[in-house]
Length: 355
Image (tube, rainbow, N blue to C red; front, side, top):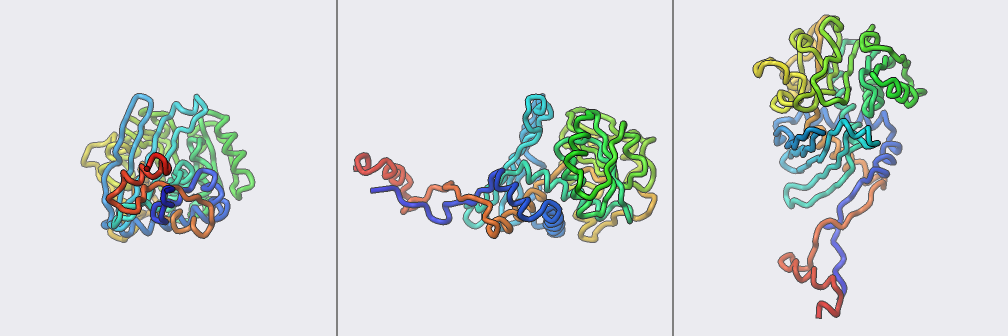
């Protein structure tokens, strides 16, 4: 007797790295970034439905490994992600990730997906969605300080969602800037390579900081930042890692995803525990103001939150079936009798052993 064929519920759609890249090009990079921004914004509007907890983190001297779970009561999702800044020296990615969605009523997974590429897309989409609410009206120029793996996604999301069409690039590694310039050539952006952070922010309406080193750093000092700009501070994403001088925070209106997590990992870890911040779901739902004046400095202290990953996985689940860019994995044991798991294992050995 041969082992039974798995049922449809036991077969889980899996989006590999190769298929994720096919899906991105099937949809188009900029349309997908816009779609992801809309999905994330829609989930922020129903913020109260979600389980919320700071990510479960295992920190070491070399980096961090984290689990990021949440549920809206009907679907559960989590992401496994690491952050190891030294990895690039060995030719490895700084960040890798995968994620899963499951139905709450059965606990059965309904999607398994790579999330290294998808995290870069959703991080950029979140930045731009937030900037759509906070950036000065008519913003067209962005300074991108830190030109690593996230930079091109950030630039294209700001273009697709906010209308940014001029990009000023700086990295302390000129090769990183050259890479970003090369990758973004022909993408509809006016590109300028800059020789310093101070040079990069000249005339910028939006300033994005996204560096990799796991340390307290001062990429921007207080005297560098003038009134009226929007700062997209996405590089501070773990304890002991910041990019901005605290005086910038003190004179900015600071917006975060989930306050308990950001106080541990974000730029505001430098500030007193009662330092005032506004959560972005409040702005998006109309419960709190965003930008209120032309001279106001708005600052998004973005560290990444599980609901954004949930939104990204939900988007992939909705789009991937129509695209065909997935494969089915036999992930769930599916015995004929749910109480006879041992019998299923025995029958898989073949007729002689089963006898």
